[in-house]
Length: 396
Image 1 (tube, helix red, strand yellow):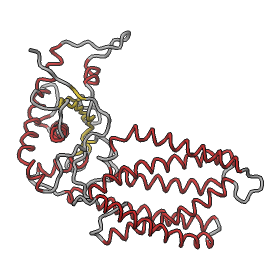
Image 2 (tube, rainbow, N blue to C red; image 1 turned 90 degrees about the vertical axis):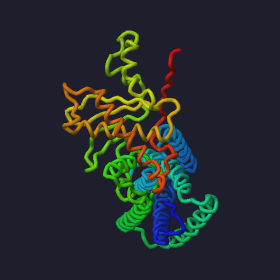
Image 3 (cartoon, rainbow, N blue to C red; image 1 turned 180 degrees about the vertical axis):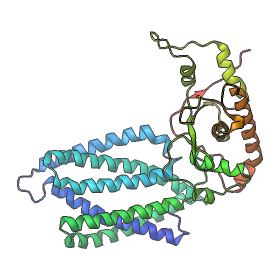
Image 4 (cartoon, helix red, strand yellow; image 1 turned 45 degrees about the vertical axis):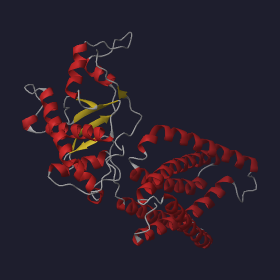
């Protein structure tokens, strides 16, 4: 985890995590060498080469799949993926150290899976590092920041290898190896957790948008530092939370209108298509004529949670996305109150109109204050997938 130069305590954490990871890597490498047959007269160089090819191939395939599936969410959730990368890498160390205890046929699978975890770590860590470096380079000194961080990492890794070369000679028994490994990995993860917690990202992703919304409803404009102290590192995707941290429901952001059509009219069993009268579509789109998003929701389930869907229009900006997310949160919150309760007597259009007006007023009153508090409202951080956009054209 790379941190700005202005915080010496974070530099210490950064150094400790890199130092412990370097020594743990040496213990892991010794176990891998033992697994591939170093010291075994029956081992074949060709077999070791083929194992290396299998590992590399598995890792590269995993890299492609991971980047395709999660590439869009790496920047908005950079803190989560940065810590996840360390967890994956440490788990790979554990698998490497476990591999000598298994038969040779099983070692191939274990070492291949370890290679996959390292490949995923590389993608997640690299992307998160790029986002965090841009966050810390507040004066346009991104190149200088990366150069200094790379130099620090090189020095600490070198010291770790020098100390680790002594450690691997002293620690030879399985109990000592595992005790040392668990201690080093615990230090590594704890230092990285603290470093991630200390980062105050200025863009509004889904979780931070939830926290900011509830603060604004209380009449307080929070700073990025305040929100950072409240947010979770790992949060369920699309969750809508109340001010008391209770889960109100979930939101599918960037949904397709086809999901709305399926909820009100199942597709034809033979053709798979859905036919709807124009009045149904008009009823859905009409309340959002001047908005850059369309929103609808499923009936409240037995779990008393709302499932909201947001379909973005073609030219929706970050402010429009934020308004849509807050509208979904306001709707989920309002549906839990008796005054807005969704029952047989309540009109869904009335609920949409009331919450839409509330959110519009909230945005108008606080947009400038949020920017003055340090928030970046121009960076899109709410979309975490390859979503569809809706193009609406009025008939002449």
